[in-house]
Image: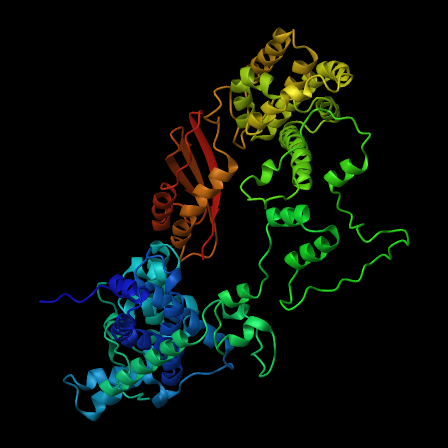
Length: 198
Length: 437
């Protein structure tokens, strides 16, 4: 069985002139980059633009990638930087409201495929999703970004530390603090927030 | 939002961990990746990273600018800008032309070789200064020695053959061409200035290095004046004093070390100032012989008193050794008591205490983790970190709001990871403030 090429192989082949290799790299990570951008920006169209820009800039900067970190952490850092830059240049109080929030729709779409079929259950799920999204939005950029990378995208603390350029201990503290604040927000909203072993 | 009944339980981690990307069809993902690929393809087809350095304006139809007219539009290679540069004639070519061509044509040729040319015709240069009426056509300013010699037959024949064009030996002179006196004379005259210039350059480098070292150790006017007279005579005296110099250099990292060494140097300088005066009376005595050695000594910090001593008293090496021995002995007799760290003793390589820079760096590396221990606190705490002589932390004590809490152990474990270079004192305690984020 043919092994899929590693990210570093794809990068090396791209540098050698193989344009298809970078296409494979794009298809491998575009969903994750898009998801991260959606959570960062709370807007699907802006997230798509950031996704495109991420890969274009990554391609332009291939010569400067020294291979000291995983290629995907490099992609994530570009995405985070582009997203934060876009957030800061936005007009204030730009925030997806209710049904327009692509995050809520994505979460409900996943849960609709499970056993919940009755309308009251769907409404409850929507309420929870909206509350969780609002709780995440209440966090600072630092805590929110770290939470998204580790808890939503599933990066390890070491990979997140590479993306964010901070020690692993700092990543651990930020995740802990973000979850604590998110839980507190949900409790204040009347939910009973439980925590699972992480 | 529903307000009826209790709110449901939310497993935050499960919600976060199972959050997919917004639903899109496979075609939409393909479309996104295709658009990315198209943008990258456009990048490849368009200008490269160096394009901003290229001339910004396109070629105008009918514009006659030589080689550029044949360049295809859109060719933004960096090499194009290099093609516009004129090919510079080498000095050898110029000298050959000078020696061979008639004098009145040489300036035009030389000028056209070095300036950006119009290939069609050499530029007609209007002289900046009007030539006097008595100037001849051949008065180009270039001296043809063969002509000069021929015009002055009374010059005695020194018996030395005119210098051949050794500098341009590889050039094949045209048969019957006059000996390239003009080429030879620059060679004759170039060797001397070159050699002298080299000596001067070496001497200047040594002097500069000597002044820099002196300025670091003892910015004392008496020292500077003592060193100025024979600045180059450093190396011979530097060698026997290498070990103390190393000591002094390492020691110089601390204020106390600087002050101590400055005092020693000052005493030595006062002693040698008088000798330096006598050495200055013989300007040519030691400079030439010391010229090679300063180049070697430029890499080593020369001792302040050494040069004057050496030049002034070549027959009294004992005085220099005695002076350096005094300096070493003085260093040993005065142990540094610097509690702020960084003093180095006679052993030279291992400091007495860790330097402030090393402590700051070591604390900075672990402070982030320590601060994260105070997540639930608002007020800072203090920690006293005790380093053992090996450079590792032997103990940490925490005071303030974090003392006795869970954060106490967290801070201690974080700060224990700090490490500095080994030092000679048995222990060294350093206090830091740990502030919460």
